[in-house]
Length: 421
Ligand code: EPU
Image (cartoon, rainbow, N blue to C red; front, side, top):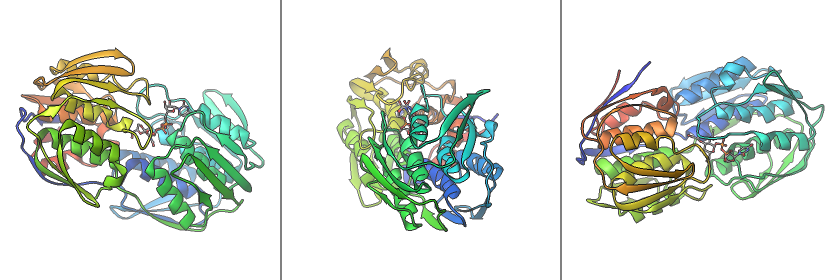
């Protein structure tokens, strides 16, 4: 089991230089899943080399889709004529995004069995919204031996109202509807930029999707596979935000490049409220670390609100902000557990309930040994360890590797001292 040994900077501002952002994990995984909709090759560029992408390749290979790296950022996927009708249980349980394959395989093959998807443990992650939608499209559902089985001789276009604006449900149903005869209308959709980008790619390959990026999406489907497609994975706005948190805390001067500031408005607004001085260009954010940070309230919300995936990294900033800050996590109900470890490092945190916590700052953080509970909290620990006095050891770093490519090399290049042991 690998772990990180992190030398704390003891609140000194030492990180300096350029941090380029990689392709977005949550766009790349869905782009890989689109291969099910195609007859021929799909070529994906700007792929991040992260664990979740490799796990998805394994899942696709098992289904009958070949994956081949043309270079270390470009992945070619090619489906066989007929795909397997079950998701490998062990692999699918490692990823929440395995659920995204279910709809397209159901539409293509008429049947699919799969386990409850896995992924980060950040609270309840039901799939009721998906199951309700597949049944509304005409599928029959059975649950046997902890596996879901969906069957449909023919799915039909229909109107689907999502009781919650779920990111993966919006993406899955949008993809499913492409291979169905007739029109599907999805309402109360999630509006994350990756959804509009995915639709744009699918439209460029012959799909007919209107309204992606808004709350109502209309898909005019055909029972016909798309021919071939090429997609450039957009930059990871969560990685950009994670780097911004590092810059706000321990940067001398940091320039975050290859990003799309237009898609990180809530994060930029939050940094301004904290007192962080920034220069923003079309595809970069330059940050000068302030002497003092101001306490603020952060409420997570679906896009365009403040992303839940940046809640943990930004809580670390709040431990160093002057005054009383509030964290209000509205999307997931188990995403504040990591705060206990920040408390043990010296942060003054009161967790009020599963959704709210008060952080009083600034307090010195002391390095310690901790376990990364999930991807984003793991990254938050890495940031806390950088700020802290003394050294830290972070275990379970496979959680961090799921979404951040070679993070230690990239941070060491700008002045951090992180060793993978
Ligand atoms: N929900 C339901 N029923 C469903 C689906 C969702 O009640 O059938 C609820 C969830 O419990 C949650 C809310 O709806 O309370 C929103 O969840 P959503 O479905 O939007 O989350 P997701 O699609 O499972 C994606 C990202 C997450 C990110 C969330 C929110 C992927 C693979 N994952 O998850 O990313 O936090 O959207 O933006 O796209 C991460 O990258 O670390 C990560 C967890």
